[in-house]
Image 1 (cartoon, one colour):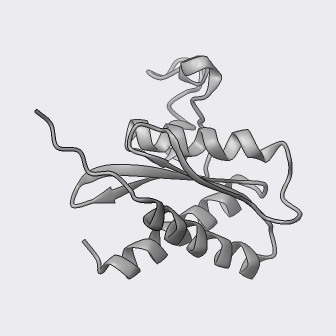
Image 2 (cartoon, rainbow, N blue to C red; image 1 turned 180 degrees about the vertical axis):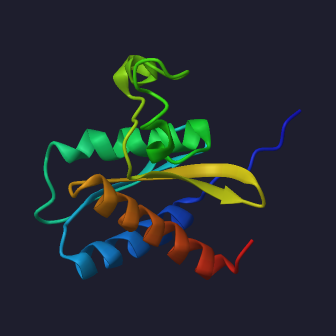
Length: 143
């Protein structure tokens, strides 16, 4: 039998709070998604002014990060023609995301979920996602 660590709704709200704070600081409203370790949505926020087209992108970034236990930005150069992961972005009904803004949530080395942010540039999305993770970990006490 497996014992699985999973984010709670309260954990997801902390991740959203940290990401929303950074989003306001940089002046780019975001769609922010938090998933469990299997990529299923726990919590979502569409800030006022965030792009409607970013809803599914944020969710898919969180899904990819949680399921692969890697940041979505790591796949960007791996998914180009001639590289080992070429075409991976067409898998999982097209949900697999290969640009920045999705990060896994790691606790004691185990992936317990993912966060995905979208509306800004890939770099802005990544900064906001990282702020969500950092806020969450600071509230837990670094593990």
